[in-house]
Image (cartoon, rainbow, N blue to C red; front, top):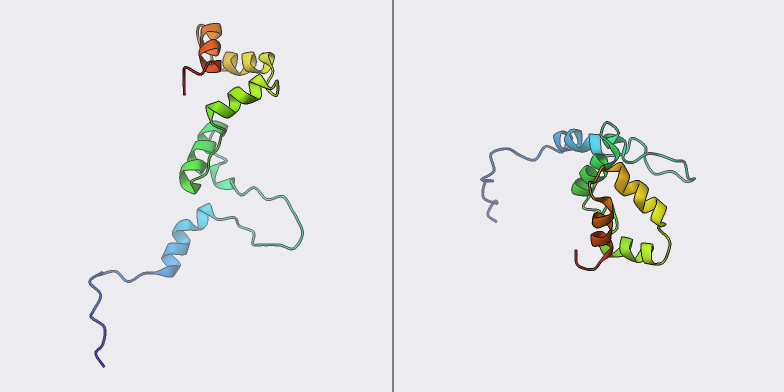
Length: 110
């Protein structure tokens, strides 16, 4: 029986090194029988909220926010109030707030 050809990869896989590299992104607590709150996003606590959502979505391949269509539907169904929309847009310091809101609520922008 022939032995397998030598690996062309000069660095063998080092499991310990791989675990050390990803350990920062893993929860420090393992599975438990009963629910206890644990912040699985602890690695992003140094970032602002929206930066953390973006970074986590990139790392984990998850969606951090609903798509624009879902927000429009929530507004039309009165699950988002006009005053909440005004506060959110105002907090961003967007000039010409009324024009911006009308465009965002129309189906022109996708």
